[in-house]
Image (cartoon, rainbow, N blue to C red):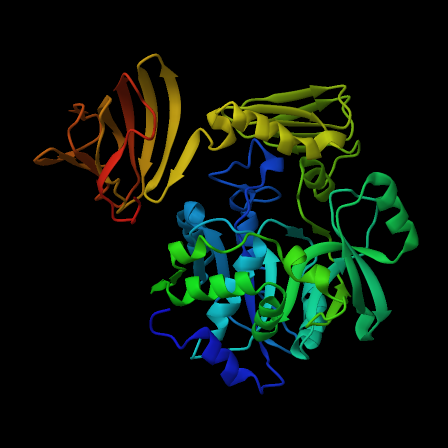
Length: 503
């Protein structure tokens, strides 16, 4: 990595250190959240949307360590690990939080173990700070109601992590649930913590009931607390190939301001696996290089892994119903209804169902079958339907567009460009475009021409002509674009220049 000591040298420099008092929040933001379809989709997944409040789940996670008053100092700059496809949306949402985060941009999806390893390498290579800080790794798509209780649990966990243990937060179960992994708790430690006896996979219903009855199994929250060097040592011992490939990708990568970019070619060789499978399931086994502890978390935690879990986490009316948007219940019980497109959703006599209405899709499901939505999305994807991948409203680094109408050989889009934003310089082989300015001022490049358009003015972009749309003003630019041609797919864009670095 440019302008930094090597990660291996940094770890050696801190090997003799027995205590560290710095916590670095590490936010794992690479998921796709298909079980919350149709709101969560591949190109704009659940961590980027407001599932249980006005802020997105990512924004709530970024703010989660604010006000921490334990024995450890929390770094004001969290590390966020996300994919290239979500980088711009992640940057924008973090900016709106007023937080100066560093973002590790994964060139490809490789699950949570490589993501945490990249974060540990970034901490180890930080020559200006404690290079063996304690990482508090949190998924970006969970909900936690009681932050004070979370902070208390993390403070206890960080104490064990400081001594060289890998610690996780376990949630004492309130019901049998087949959607969670479980941790079998072992020997009791101080402050309510236990040694980890073993991790177990998501169980069938009967086994989950046995776990809850035994009172020796806690839900796996997916929150891990560990020193950077301890994680890297454990990974080197348990999966040397992953350690070597991540290290090579990190050290041959680049730093671009607040962005850390691992080398794509090197990262392509990284094995894909989760934190649980790679390390945590080996804790307690013969020859394991690390000890593990689990600290109880009683803070209203939910992984929001299904619409049923969202219903569970929300405030309900006297009949157990949850409404979001324009929703009316009549004789309904224990139902969840959400209107995203502004249409009225009316539920009459329903029980235990989920109704999600968006601009381009409607989901109706029995709450008890909410986990099956992932299989449904897989079927939609096999049919190459666009609803599996993207919303009708598509975010871009310059703003967004909304495909409001389409038919044979034509498509109508509403395009909104942020102040100072600009689309790429591009051309199309199969379509021409008409632009009408509805609001703001447009600066247009069309072939060798450059000119301004004001409200109610328009222009025509012939097929094959290079063009660009920019917003030079201080208010949003809104245009209506009418496309016409034999093929109107988004892959008929030849980018000739782009200030956002897109291919």
